[in-house]
Amino acid sequence: MALSVLLPGLGQFYEGRRFAGGLWLLATLVGYVPFIFPGILLHLLAIGAAGFRATEPTG
Image 1: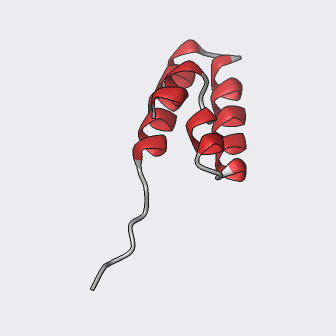
Image 2: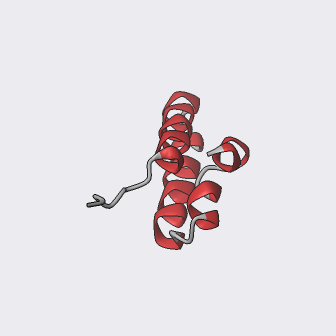
């Protein structure tokens, strides 16, 4: 998650989810180009997505 603070999508790249990381990076950059606010919002969502990890039930 801390990596996504530096660069959106970097946390997903680190976890091996390259496609998701690339999408977050691209979406955030597209959001930053025309407007700052959508870029900031997408950046925060990417940080949250990096902290989300699907867990398998144990039992």
